Length: 46
Image (cartoon, rainbow, N blue to C red; front, side, top):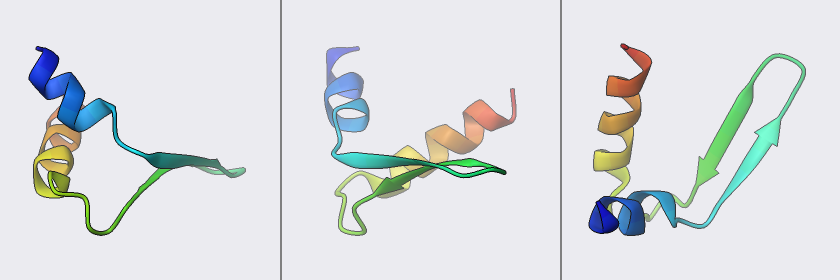
């Protein structure tokens, strides 16, 4: 679990809260960007 947490959750980013949504803005050059997006999609399908 430490590896997943280290690479996916300890990522520099910015949480932007607007009236309609909450966005997590990550670097466009994040090494594990595709993996992060896939995990997020899986969580949303729950």
